Amino acid sequence: MKFEVGSILLVRKFKLPSADKDKFFIVIGESNNTVSLLAMTTSQAYFDESLIKQGDIIDRDVTAYCFEAHEAIGINGFAFNKNTFLYHKRSIHTFSIEVMDTLNIEYMDCLKKEEIINLIYSFYKRTPAKYMTMFEKILSELSN
Image 1 (cartoon, helix red, strand yellow):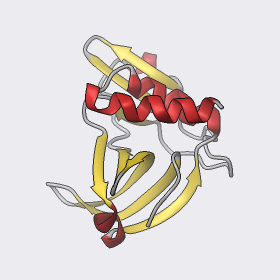
Image 2 (cartoon, rainbow, N blue to C red; image 1 turned 90 degrees about the vertical axis):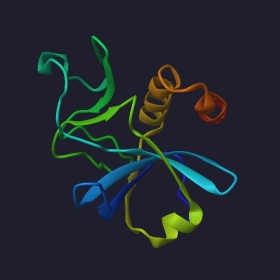
Image 3 (cartoon, rainbow, N blue to C red; image 1 turned 180 degrees about the vertical axis):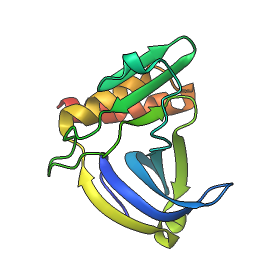
């Protein structure tokens, strides 16, 4: 199962160390036989809540990308019910196509183009070098 960059996916009963939980993911890239995803890991703010706004958040050593509650981010109007954060240091997860096929995935929507660009650029600036080439390629394709 393949999804385009920017797809917002809901994985039902995703296996976490503490329990199985419904988790959101956003497809941010694909290479060879893998799909890289950003996990919507939390609605918990691990920084000064006065900083909450759509987009980048930087507070001391914590950096994140925020989707504000009820802000339409999808081309069909999808919005999260709560402020949702993707922390740069721990949000990237890579799964093979075979593993993706075993997950209970619901396609929810696709991010608006501007939102995809902002999100990927945010991670491009703050993630390990091994992802740079992938992010540069996606940003180049989206800019054309």
